[in-house]
Structures are given as structure tokens and as C-alpha cells.
Image 1 (cartoon, rainbow, N blue to C red):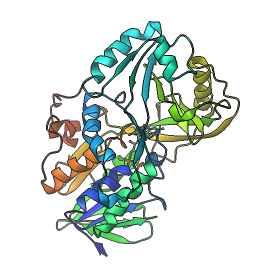
Image 2 (image 1 turned 180 degrees about the vertical axis):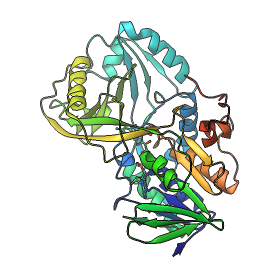
Image 3 (image 1 turned 90 degrees about the vertical axis):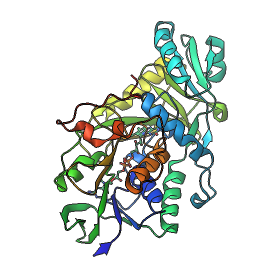
Image 4 (image 1 turned 45 degrees about the vertical axis):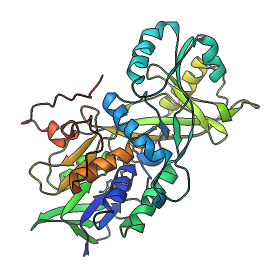
Length: 382
Ligand SMILES: Cc1cc2nc3c(=O)[nH]c(=O)nc-3n(C[C@H](O)[C@H](O)[C@H](O)COP(=O)(O)OP(=O)(O)OC[C@H]3O[C@@H](n4cnc5c(N)ncnc54)[C@H](O)[C@@H]3O)c2cc1C
């Protein structure tokens, strides 16, 4: 039997960042079903830190996370966690109201420039002429998920914590104040606190423990990569996004990547791209830009898992001592991970609450229990 103070299920960014932070206070063990950390959502993301994602709560969690990405702790090693990349949200004349509203909302979080047609095309020359308005944040960060995952793992290990990969949790039991799990290899792990950071599978893991599910909804999103025209200067290319949820694209390892921003409901699974969304990505690239997607170089899909109110859940489950939820990071799990880890630390260990303008109740898993009235989140936004 392997015993620790805190057992974390899930070696994605949620589980690893929480474990790395908690390891400063306790003996922490992470169990990951796959051989490789970040194999599912955390390794398949668009890896941008920007404020056009989510709503005011997500933006507040992102803003609070920025200092960590700009100046990671020494225990992370000396590899940068990302690089600056401008974020351009562009609009046609018929989309200007949506752009105005977004600018108002985002301006509390980022220094934005309003761009006219010339400014939009100076920043992103491949957009079609009907991209007439834009807002730019020159201070976005293209995150490096590998560096982020490995940095968290390095910190965890340097503080005496451990990762056990290739250990899928099959059963979860509770007796005498201790959670005991058995993996598919027949190995047993026990701790008084169990953190459920199983991503798309978090409701299933709760089911193993006899804890009521949150109603998580995994949604598939697709990305394609393709060659940029010869001579395109990708160094200065932005992350470019339509003001509506139709398309984003950005440079990717000497090519471009694009997503049609699909949100197809899915079971928890090893998500694979479907032809329809791959074709939609290419179609929307050609609709919004002057580029031709001649040949798709690679494609992948991943799951973005949402709670019913699209806000993450962090907190102990009512009626299940020591069972802690860390789930529902949707499409913002990388960029909010440092602050979410500090929130977990605060709720489990009692350190200072890291985001004074966010009420813990807004994140509480209890908000999804029928007997609780919905919280009136001060930062819920639209
Ligand atoms: C296409 C796409 C684009 C995205 N773009 C961005 C972006 O630009 N910025 C951003 O911040 N976020 C983005 N995201 C979202 C981000 O990737 C997710 O929010 C984040 O990765 C979720 O992390 P996680 O650790 O909860 O999930 P995961 O990375 O899926 O980790 C959960 C882990 O739990 C493990 N697990 C499950 N069940 C068990 C079990 N029974 N036993 C042991 N282990 C188990 C799984 O194997 C998995 O590795 C994007 C996601 C996608 C798919």
C-alpha cells in the first residue's frame, strides 16, 4: 500500500499544478492513467493566454495567473513557460456591436488598442478586406504546455512528491477517514484527501467514490495545421480570432494552425478529429483570409470539459469527507492553472485566498447540488 497525505487523480495541468503547489505542505502522490502526462486535453490545446476566453470570472483567474507565467518559480527550472504573442480579435462591419461589447468587457483586464481596417491588416495581412475593425492586446502569451507540465512535475518531485503514470484508478473506497484507490495494475494508494482532477472523466471518478456528479460536459474541439505561403513572416503573426466563436488561427512550428471553434458534445474519450470539423476549419480559413488551405499537415482534437455554468469547480464535496473536486476548466485550464492551484492550496491547507474579488462559493461544487440555491456570482459576467 502506497500512503500519502493527498492523492491526486489526473496528471493533466489541473492535477499536476495543484499537486506541485500542495507538495509544499504535504506528501502528495499523483496517479495518471496514461503513460504520458498531459496526454489528453492538456496536450492538445491552442496554448494561448488571452482574455477573449470565457467570462469575467475566467478573466479574473487568468489575470491573477499572469505573474506566474511571466516569472515562474526557480523550482520550475529555467525554461520559459511561453512567449509573447499579440492577440487580435477582428470583426466585419456587421459584427461591430459584438466587438464594442467585448472591448468594454476586456478593457478591465488588458491594455487594448482599437484598430481600423489598416491597423487590422498591418497586424494580420492575410485577413480579407472585410475585416474592418479589431482590438489588439500586444501582451498575450503563447504558452508552452510541455514546459508548464514538466515544470510542475519538477516542482512536485523536488518537494518529495511522486507521479505514478500508467495507473488508471478503477475503484475508490473510503473507510476510517482514509480514501483507498486500486488501479488497473492492482496497486493500492491511500490518503485522507483525494483530489479529483480527472478532467473529462471527473464525474466518472466521482461515481467510483459514490459522490454525486457535477454534470460535466466534455466538448470536442478540432485543430488543423497547414503551410503558410512561402515568405510569410510568422514571427510577427498574431493569434487572430473572429469576434464570434467561428475561427482562430496562429503560427505553429513554422506553419499555421486553425480551429473552427467547434464544441461537439462527447463522452470522455481519446478524442479524434472528425472530417466535418476538419473541413470546416479549412473552409473558415478560406472564408476569412486570402489563404488557400492546399494540404492539411496535421490534425487533432481534444475535449474541453465544462460544468453546467461554465465556471470551474474547486472545493470539497459535501457529505464526502476529504473528497476534493478540481474540474470543469473548459477552454481555459492552462491559462488559469497557477491561480486554480493556489485556490486548491487555500481550500485544503488554509493559505491566503489568492483572488480577493472572487468568492469561494462561486467555485464551490455545492452550487450544483439541487438542495443549494444558485450562488449569485459577483464575477459571473456574460
Ligand atoms: C483544442 C483545445 C484548445 C484549447 N485551448 C486552450 C487555450 O488556448 N488556453 C487554455 O488555457 N486552455 C485551452 N484549452 C483547455 C485546456 O487544455 C484544458 O482546460 C485543460 O487541459 C484541462 O486540464 P485537466 O488537467 O483538467 O484535463 P486533462 O489534461 O484531460 O487531464 C486529466 C487527466 O486525468 C486522467 N484520468 C482520467 N481518469 C483517470 C483515472 N480513472 N485514473 C487516473 N487518471 C485518470 C486522464 O488520463 C488525463 O490525463 C484547450 C483545449 C482544447 C481541447
